[in-house]
Length: 246
Image (tube, rainbow, N blue to C red; front, side, top):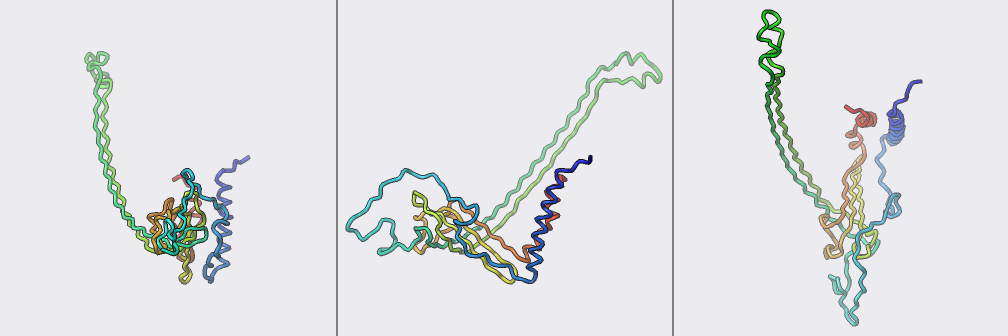
């Protein structure tokens, strides 16, 4: 009975998934990609509340008969986000420039020459027998050389703003924020996703915060549409790239 390769089911599953994707693309030919609906981030499948190391709780201290509130930057009201559902502006600033060059060179040469000069009385032999007998038991030469070079030159820049919503207030007062922005230009949607944990003290008086001050930051910038679809390899090629060992 012929054996079925283990990779065949994977190929079939990938083909079915690719067919479903192809059907969706065929259905949307000539149509602009649809924008995602505005949804509650905490109600999305797979959402998990953030848990961070917390200090021991401390009793709150209130100042009676005082108009000033600790932590406020405005006399009457603090305009910064502080509760679940509040909105703040995240200033995304990513300017990454890295250049690395590595070079390695190695060489080695060795020679082994050992044995008995008069191997089994070879000097007493004459004629053809003397030519067949080796003069020494072992003679070996080896030479190896390695020359490796590598370089990395990467430059990225992303400057934009996105509004984020406070989805959770941690016990120590830190805020979990998440923001998503979608912009459709012709038949291409560009989306920006920002999420992470921020300190209320890092929020500016104009209710903005730099992305460099977001802990556990998750920033994704990409898109979907005709241009992205053309740039992606066909699903069959992606499956073969995964399965082929060479």
